[in-house]
Length: 340
Ligand code: NAD
Image (cartoon, rainbow, N blue to C red; front, side, top):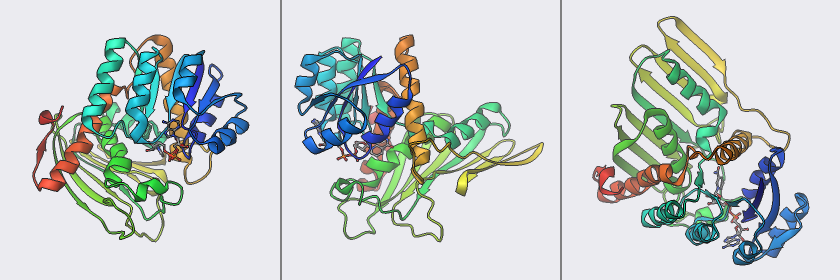
């Protein structure tokens, strides 16, 4: 399978490593407006076909899918370009600047019959997959309450300076992953209540958000995210999970410790991610999930089946982001049905 990449920035390097590890994939072309990024990534991954214009790259063609790793402002135009050229596309999160854009992108891909996957990789993290496996095993019964929590004081702005400038920050950038994990574990949600704060005076957007979700399954969940939390031990980029269920409880805590308590007793084990040869701590948890979602894409593309985080699926995660901002702004609960 031949692939092409658009956007050779900070995160795309992980994606190129992931593709290189998949024997069935060869990345044959790359594109970035910035010639410096183009040569850094082109040289590191030995890709000869290099373009500063995505249009020129599609015009030349010769690849079976495109991996779009640019920032959000360009996602709609690039996905629509891929659709026009009938090339299956992966698009980084956040899906689009607005829910209307995201809906238009899904519609365009569906009309053309082109697979579209959002690179929503957090549900592919080994510890999150371990939590899901416990739920699916029935060991703790039916969940009725959950919490997905990401609280950190890590300086994300040095690697990704654009994060300090956007009017929207933590929900759109990080909370989007946590909300997707809540959907993955507890099913779709129909109502959202959110509160936000900005603690860091040097950034434009919110850096703290607390969200309450009503899931169709009957689960009530809290999704709380913060980049203003100074802890004695920095947990970045670990997601903590708490689940209370009819027969027991589950806790995923610091250093990937998973505690499952049920009628048969208490089991504690570590569900740490693999440190891939090209990965570096503390990012290795996220880096491994990149490799896993790419494998999923290749398998689904080959089988002609929709990926789990398809554009259609991700509309429901993206709608939760929109609902959170609306709820925080209005001080009201927002019905997801009004958005989707
Ligand atoms: P970045 O700014 O470092 O890289 C983006 C690159 O895209 C830049 O080199 C820029 O020149 C290029 N670019 C932008 N528009 C272009 C266009 N129209 N044509 C060609 N090149 C273009 O950004 P980043 O930090 O790598 O983030 C990229 C995306 O990845 C963002 O949407 C971000 O939210 C996402 N991200 C995802 C994860 C994750 O875990 N899934 C983690 C970090 C970042």
